[in-house]
Length: 175
Image (cartoon, rainbow, N blue to C red; front, side, top):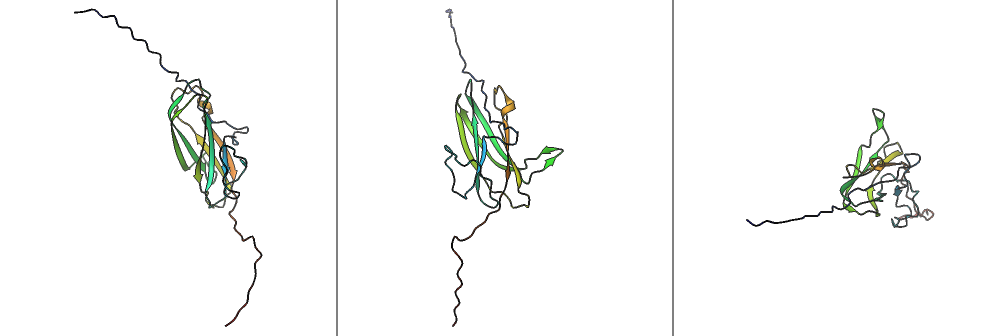
């Protein structure tokens, strides 16, 4: 029977965000996707001094991906997919990224943050050295620009070569 005067104030957090990966110019050359092979040792992703490596067939290569969120709010609960078209081909005139490499899940990417990560890819020696890498960030809740959620990097695979650094020596012997 008593009267109550209840006031509820709720200030929801900013949820608009712009999770993105840089689309290259031309579109198949994103600066946010690069390959690091083992020929000269793997790089530290913070420095990534030799972003120009080409993948080596039959060996583990790292595909580095850099995404960021300029804001205005944090992005929550989204996935990043890395796929490869190997060898490059189309279906109905559109590229077919038929090889699934890996999916990365992010619980949160704060406004203003950048995240760099790598996935491991072992290219097939399929006779066609041209492959294309695609990174896709689908279905980000309250993303203010979904046109910058997919980027591509084209590669030219090189054959794995091994050789001794020493000159071969023949030694003849008998019993």
